[in-house]
Image (cartoon, rainbow, N blue to C red; front, side, top):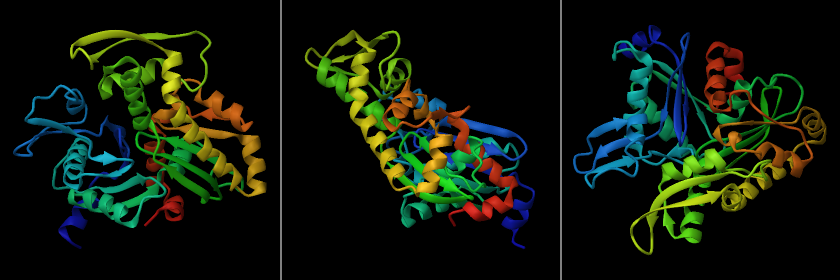
Length: 341
């Protein structure tokens, strides 16, 4: 037995939702121990790490020229290998809470349609971050597990996991994937759509954090019962000075309309490609939404209206992936059936 393997025996197994927007880590026996933005602040010249997670996010749009805030994950996959490794090391150490010599076994949720090269990049980053073993599982399946869906039964279950970089759609039966797809339209795309809309309509430049706040506070997929407005600040592109304007929920709905349509069309395709028997199950049981995007106001109502199916938001959509991944740590039969590698 190697020293690394020996140490892994005493380490705490970890389940990781390595997301484009946020990373969540579940430690076996202790619950969710890390929930931080997937961001690293670096010195531009030396590449020295200055902050990771929440502290790095606070620097977004506010850093001097020699400091950069990097998002190492893009569209659900690794865009910057070295920075991802640094970020994982930080989160693993924060989760472990014990000797840095101990190496945990890690299970990571990944989008359903990433390439073999992208899968290897995730594994190698985790191994270089001192994991003893790394296993991959599809995010949509573990999101279904985390949402409490009975995926081991001979019934059709449909889950839509709307994350930061990707939206994963899956039809599951008997612990297996009958159909799955991954669309690179999700939370970050919605933020960018708001930025572009405000820029185009109001000649106002806003940052990512402001766009996210707008989406959360007044963003919606269908008309709200009561109109909402929000005061926002940015830089006037014509005069070059700070300016404050008020935007309405109707405007933001217009900004999000194209992206919402892409998501709904992808779900329609999944329903069209589902076998008839499983379609009948989905008609009865409905579609379950997980991920941060599931919290977009009235998205469930809009989806239900356009598909004619019941749509439910998971009890805790933000942690569904990591909680589902954590359940696999203690159920080896399920783990063997749904692991990717």
